[in-house]
Structures are given as structure tokens and as C-alpha cells.
Image (cartoon, rainbow, N blue to C red; front, side, top):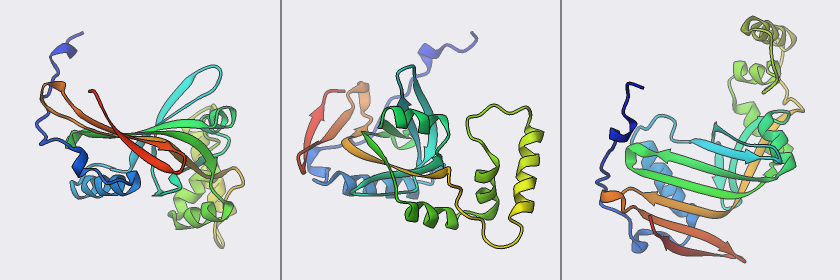
Length: 212
């Protein structure tokens, strides 16, 4: 290997994070950091790693956060995809927002539930038409013979729905990760990072500082 990975180091020089700076509500704190990530012109600040698992393996991929509130964090996908099959087998997941240009990360873990059909329709209707057609054309996570076969299916969907609106596929919709743990990580010098975790206890959130 020509790259010496052990020499790839960066000193974190952030001014840090104190308990006094943390809002008592983790969703308010997340909104603040999301706004700052957006203002910093990061590439897709709403991109998040999603970890799911079943009895056989753990899987990880990047998806896009499409909404959040105090109920949880919402993304959309094909309900026949591998991630969906794992969620069905084990309705728990973890999320990671790697805002490394800001020397920050947010880690979230919780249970997973489907959003309402109405919410899925509302979001699906807001997508560009070609993205709507793409949802119909792709049997996500299934093997395909070639890219040409995928493009042919896309053209078939364009022809099928050339008139009128594209309806929501019955195999497509949203999931909500309902958090029970949310951690805010701020890089610091000498790897002595600041970490604060919100843990759901009953109806309240308890905040604890963690060792780096």
C-alpha cells in the first residue's frame, strides 16, 4: 500500500463544547447544528449513515434525512429493499451525521416505525417527476442484468405515466427513527473530544458527558 494511513492525522482545533452550551432538548440542539452545517455549505448536510441489522449481518449505507421533529428522524426508501427487510426483522437502527469539516458528529440510536401513508404521499408528490419514475423503475437491492435493463424499465415507466400525476408506489414510503439516545460529538485537540449524550428516561431526556 502506497498510502501510510497511520500518518493521516488532523488536529482538531475547535473551541469545544460545554454543558452550558447544550439545550435541554436534543431536537433543539440538533436543529441548531443542522442549521450551522447548512450555513457552512457542506455537501448534503442532511446525508446520514444508516445502520440496520438482522440475525445474519449488519448493513450500513448513506440515506438522506427528509424531516425531523420531536417524534424522530424521517427518511424514505423502497419497502422491499435490504434495509427494509432488516428493519422488519429488527426494528432498531442507528444514524450518524459525519460533519467532519465542522469537527462534529451526531450519533442517534432508536426504534424504527413506518410513517403514515399520507406523509409518504406528501413527500413523494414533492419529488421531481423523474425521481418519482425512478422509484417505480428500481427494484431496490435486487440483482439486475445490466444498466441498460434499468434504463429500459425507466423508459417503460415514463411511457406508463406520461399522462397525469405519478402515484405513490405501494412498495415505497418513509421510516421514522424514534430516538432513545442522541450523542453530540465535538472534536478537540489531543483527541480529548467533547461528547454529550441525551438518554431518554421515561418522558425526559437526561444529559451526560462522556469520556472521548
